[in-house]
Image (tube, rainbow over all chains, first blue to last red; front, side, top):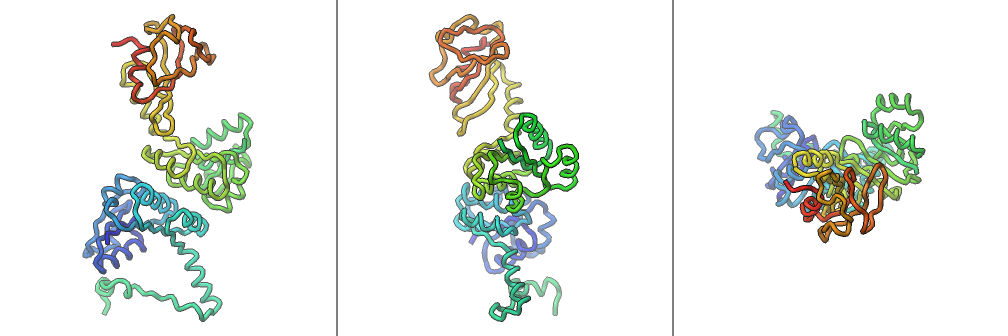
Length: 157
Length: 220
């Protein structure tokens, strides 16, 4: 699968690394090339510097042949706008956006953008912990589950 | 009218002052605390500090009863979201967004924004016109840009001087909607004659702009 990721922060870079390790083709866009350091030098990801709200940058990053578009920058509005461009202009079938504001996440979910609100997810998991709710499974997905090169990367034994 | 202006940069600031002078009810929303408090000193409780995309603040600002929302922050994406949320959550009748990137004009229209203003495009048009010979100045383009609103100044050397409107040979896809003469806007009739100093406002299809130009201006 060809995946285009907007935002090389913690989520974007971790996602990129995992998808590449699983054999997918990944391109990642970020405003600064510094952010790409999170990828490490070994992983084969196409890196594009620019703003994901600009259609020319998106084209340069290969959006026209992408199967999936993922918007995970720090800015809700950036993710919202980029996701709508991917949907409306480039007609990408699978568009996912991480939105921090629960209300905006709901509003745009109704507009057919697959939004993930990490705020509500985290709140419900932590609440379960706080209340000692045994029904919720422990939420410890550790990085080594997701990233096969992780241990090597940090020189762990 | 009750107008909410989101973004108190220079555009938002001067726009709000103008609206207030004309007697409208205005709320000016600004995210940055320092800027907001500075403007509060001058404009009082017209200014509201906060993010115009946060629902709670939008409700507090009265988006529900606003007639028009104007989003003029420096970021296109913020302007987009303010307007989309205003429409969806608060059913605001009219949303106006500023775009800095001219290619977003079309995108915003597609995404449901009522009016989009691109200052880049407007200024570009003015620069573009400086280099073109002739005196046609475009002042707007309707929706899809196929029809333009243009203004032409009638000079001493204009071929239509003294002629009535019905005789000047307008292209088929052009329509004169007004003649501005001495600060008065006239609705021209077929027998209205042109005099030097007139400003003609016309609707013309994009393809016929040149033919319109040659009707009013002396060819080089």
